[in-house]
Image (tube, rainbow, N blue to C red; front, side, top):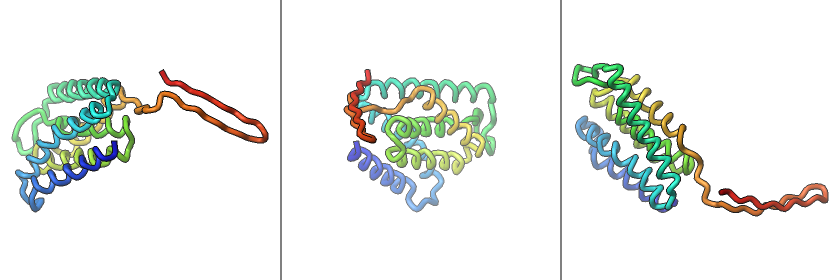
Length: 182
């Protein structure tokens, strides 16, 4: 799993730096956020497929569908205008909820160290939405809460090993154990 994430990290940073140029071009930052909107969830789901983790694929799918339903339900319910009057339905940020759902899935399922690049990309996506004047801080915060919350409802830790043999000794006592996870 580690070589996949190393290439993911490298390609992610390369994408961010190439798309944004000198970090001063507002349109390039927005475009990068749009690209990451798809890249983060595809990476999360792709990881489950590469590892043959069918349970993880199903957990990701349930979290993703819940995230989209809640995000768009809130957008319709609140009907908050975007900053600078450039559209409607700003609350919560869909880009942010989607990328944070993907990042938090990797975190919950496979561990924090594997999710660091995804969280960086999710944070950059949130920044790109504020920079493009599509959202304010409350929209971003709500999007991240919805995305992370939808992951926490369905995702469990990844268990590669189904069998374990344990041994423990203490004060001339010995304990041999065997566990099997179904």
